Amino acid sequence: MIGDKILEKLREEIPQVEYERYIKCLNFDEESSMSDTKVFTAPNPFIANWVKIKYAQKISKLFETIVGISPTIQIDVKSNSEVKSLKNIQESISKTHNKQQLSLNINPSFTFDSFVVGSSNQFAYTTALKTAQEPGIIYNPLFIYGGVGLGKTHLLHAIANYNLNRNKKVIYVTIEQFMNDFTYNLQNQTMDRFREKYRECDILLIDDIQFLSKKNETQTQLFHTFNELHQKQKQIVMTADQAPKMIAYLEDRLKSRFEWGLTVDIQPPEFETKIAIIKKKCELDGVHLKPDVINYIATKLDNNIREIEGIIIKLNAFSKIVNQEITLDFTKNVLSDHIKEERKNITIENIIEIVSKELNIKPSEIKSKSKGVTIANVRRIVIYLSRNLTLNSTPSLAQYFGMKDHSSVSHAMKKITSEIESDENFKLLIENLKNKILNS
Ligand code: ADP
Ligand code: MG
Image 1 (cartoon, rainbow, N blue to C red):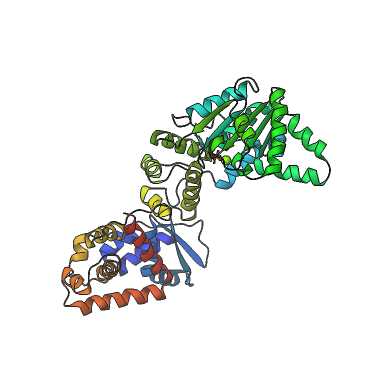
Image 2: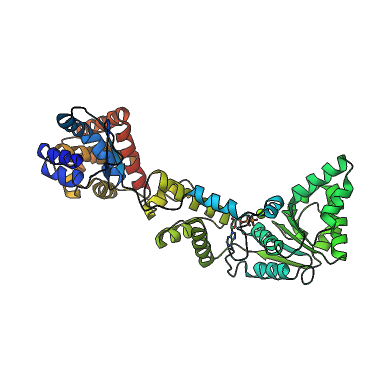
């Protein structure tokens, strides 16, 4: 293949070590190549960038000698196995929506099956399930309270989903929707419609009751609705971020009624439950995360499951955009905005270790006095990063690298700075290295 031939030719023009380090691991991607663009793949983004910076021009010239035109050289990163795309997931979810679910605003994926049970939510889960199975009979009303993102809405939807196929009339609303419905029907003099909707159902599910605070007219409406449903032994389930008695500006008669049945709380998940929830979400979303990544997410992120879910989606999306596997390093990078971790003391040794790994050059070579072009350039990168990421002064860096004096360090800094300014790829390479170091 022409691509391979070109790389063989390049071998004759560059030092053997360079060839072994960067060129040997490239593959020619014939399918993606066109006459004016030739595509190669590299095993990681660092090598891809490095080749782009150092050899793209040479490779293009070699093409010219053989085929007459000098193409643009594109270096991609080898793609990973196909993961189900986000779009596919969303499409498959929306296909399973049935009309009733849509009109009720019920998320079909919030079921009892998809809810992970641990000691933090066991009681809420069990009582919600019993309520779904025998509405109006055991706990009426059922009042579930707890912090944000702990699964309250999920349980309400699970009760709805459970009963949609059992010929029960289920209404799910947030208290805000209830309030809007009320004011709308009041203004339009259609209160009979409002009453029919809320008082002729078998199960009324009301989310986020805490927003009822200070809404006096709505409180009155809810009071009457409650009484009528309760009298008819129809089920009422409510959620809030606090226990009824803690909600400010809520009429006492409502508070006491909310406590007639059973009040349960959901606590933040313990570590094992968090791990289990992450695994379950991955399974549902078709995302594969390695155990060390799952552990990291569970340890570093707070208990809001909604946030954890968002992170899984973000990781998956990013890994596709940059075509990288979701490794621990990758995860640390992506999560760096979310996690306020104390920055470790970074040393020159840390920097050398990471740069040497990423750019395939031995630490001893970086520290040597070799004047080989690549090694000298990598050494300058290390100096630049050390000056920026550690507290070392220019004289101490000069001493570390056995340079004449601090002016040699300044010279190296200038060279890298101007290269960053003039070359987008080089800038990207440095940014990526910085990220790796900061998140190591
Ligand atoms: P809340 O209403 O308490 O703020 P949600 O019910 O909206 O929280 O939950 C936020 C997200 O976390 C939802 O996507 C939900 O499916 C998920 N979630 C919360 N707890 C669990 C759990 N125990 N098992 C599975 N998913 C959960
Ligand atoms: Mg909610």
